[in-house]
Image 1 (spheres, rainbow, N blue to C red):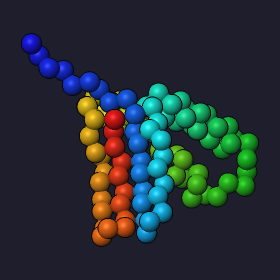
Image 2 (image 1 turned 120 degrees about the vertical axis):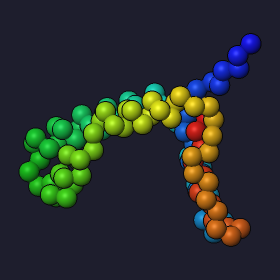
Image 3 (image 1 turned 45 degrees about the horizontal axis):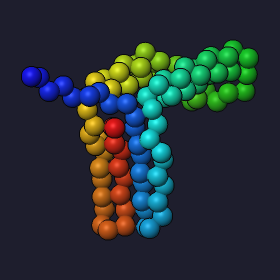
Image 4 (image 1 turned 120 degrees about the horizontal axis):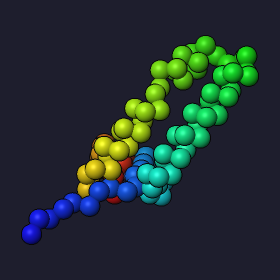
Length: 100
């Protein structure tokens, strides 16, 4: 019998700095994909109709590709749960990003 690793479904972010904690609840990948689509849709409309956008912002938006973000999410989903980032400095500072 072959053991298959269940693909990841969510991402969770936890930040602790000097005793203050920010724990973002696990976000499902389908919601991230939806928000990426929504953000790119709003950005394209904004770029067409708003003339006062900073040139650096315009350049950054033109460099980000929706397909690359979707490909990144698809690759993360292929693997089982793992810690993408786990950084600690001393006892009071920690950043952890987990794929669940």
